[in-house]
Amino acid sequence: MSLKRKSSIFKTVKFRIALLYALLFAISSIALFLAVYYFLYVGMMKNVDEKLMVISRQLEDYYLKGERYEESDLVSAANREVPDKIVSAVRNSVKNLNILRYEEITNGNFTGYEFIGISDGIIYEIRIDAQGKIIEIEKHQKYDAAVLEKGFITESHFEGEKKIYFLLVSKNGEILAKSDLRHWPGIPSEKNIVSDARKSGSFRTMNVSGLHGKTRVCDRLIYDGNILEIGIRLSGEEKILKTFSSIFLSVFIASLVISSATGWLVARKSMAGVNRISEAAISIGKGDFSSRVSSGKEGEEIENLVTAFNEMISKTELLIRELQEVTDNIAHDLRTPLTRIRGTIETTVNSSPDIDDYLEMSGDVVEECDRLIGMINTMLEITRAESGMLDFSKDIVDMNEVARAAFDLFTPMAEMKNIEFKLNISPQHVTVLGDINHLQRVVANLLDNAIKYTPEKGRIIMSVSSDGSCAGIIVSDTGCGISETDLKNIFDRFFRCDTSRSEPGNGLGLSLAQSIVKAHGGAIAVESKVGAGSSFKVSLPVQAS
Ligand code: ADP
Image 1: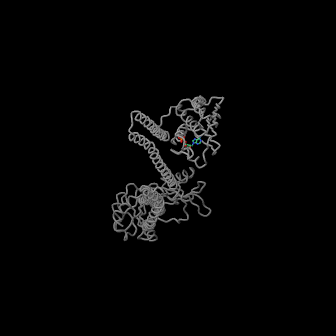
Image 2: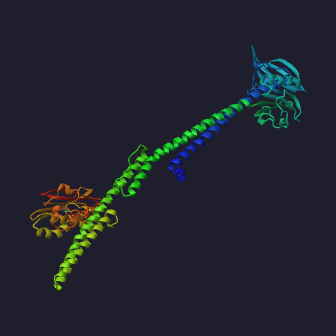
């Protein structure tokens, strides 16, 4: 494939659609990935934080009481309201008691609460039943870092020393107790002094120096102002996220390739119709008007385009054919009078003419020229009327009046041929909107033809009628009639039936009449039988006067 071909592919609609398709896919996939990754991460961190909170709570028990509770004995009631009478009974049991925390306890038959508080540097553990009766009060040393450290070691052993570490840090950053930190080279560090530690625990994710991967740390402020710090490695969670990312990446790459290829194929299929139209247009451009675009299965829009294109080409072909015919006819019809003019002049000049011969010749030439000018003007008028360029005035025209005037005008001609000529006008007003001069020409044309093509002693009837919405002007005669094959062509420019060649005319009268009637929103129709006569009907929309 040449470079030119390659660069033209980048400009194609197919390529652009495929690229757009791939881009949209990539953007939506990445957005989906980020959303899933975020929720997965947040969900896992929530689990880790809950676990850290549970452990830190247990360790706080060690610290406060110097012994460990059995987990099953404890039901956290941190968020539940304790009845006021219980709280005041506990407060009254020890002077100046500052309640640090409490647990709701259900143990066998016993249901009640266990409060831990501090007074005068002594930790009190108070058991009270649900009715507010003090069951037991135990005293502990305020601070028991040694017991806590034992708890650190037990817990870290249980979880894995590489996985978790524990520290008890004073406000000044002094390490008061710690778990086995052999596997935590970066701990303790200056990061262990946390100013915003809360009782409910504050959480952060950090990189511990010397270790690969991240560590989640919980800092919990305990009652004496010291901070209990627990760090847990996120290797499991990171592994899940890494696996998820690599699976996503593989699926993403595969889907991107597939979606781009699909986009390309879909676009290629849709564009196939357009290509067929381009090919047909090129071949038409070379002069082959018989070319048509075959229909495919690219979808409705392309099919509509193909149909519209084919219709347009059919009409263009017809117009060009008509144009050719008209040109041929014009050439033919101009040649005859011109030849006649030439012949007249030649004959006169070659016959030792005197002044009278010249005068006669001039008269003949003027007559022929007038006929020619009349023909050219009529052709121009037809073309203008058909293309909508002719300026018709829009007046209310009384068709009864138009018919009567035409009747008066053509009666002498009919009488000369001994033709019976009748007029039936409508008893009511028949008015249309239009150009009176042109409508008069239509009627005159029909009457002129009727008289021309009706033999002596024949009959012509002109009638005007209206059905309220449509005005009808009918001119019927008992003339020679028109054959069925000729009937299809009589409105074509320059068409004349063979039988009428002996009569004067140029075959433009009915074309002009039809173009005028159509421009007025009407129609012209004909019924005829050879030997029996013809009937021309002009229909025009009625306009109330
Ligand atoms: P022309 O100048 O030849 O009359 P038109 O366009 O008016 O041209 O008419 C076209 C042809 O239709 C005529 O040549 C004639 O053959 C035929 N025609 C028109 N009117 C009649 C008629 N009333 N009776 C028979 N033939 C007619």
